[in-house]
Image (cartoon, rainbow, N blue to C red; front, side, top):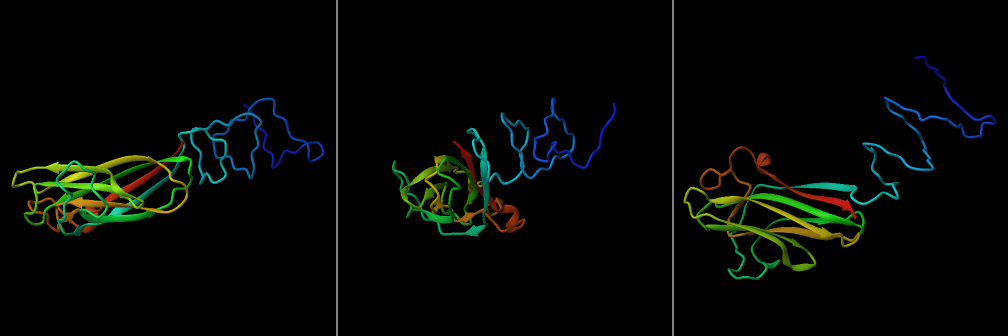
Length: 210
């Protein structure tokens, strides 16, 4: 197999496009200021921020955003013991974050987790609910109950999908039910052990194009 190495290939009058009768296979990195194609481009992976990408079919990841839910000691307000959705002024707020979607044409996938625990004997049932600022009712709520005197809380996970509301700002929040600490160590009653940063949990938003 032989090879030809050149600095540049141009057309006959420096304007004409160079036509290659067969495709070019590259095993390294191809860098170009501009690439134009008459049909399609196929690749296993695209790199870059995607700001100039158009005409891409649904299912493309647009943005993934992470926030941290810190370790904290709180009050132990509760949601009412009935069959109605928790309200945005009930329970104890443990996290809030303003968020602006990148586009109206996407779905938001929200995933959050937290250790909801007792530091003192305040409850057998604990829970956490997800809210958004323009809705007084919870978007999603998860609870746990355990009467065992050794277990004083639960690791709560909430997953929620919703359509983008556009490109304006709204605020997500998490509110806790009954327990009086978040992301403390689970060693009997919740305690400050093993470091605050290692117990901090995540609030994740992924945006997927529709």
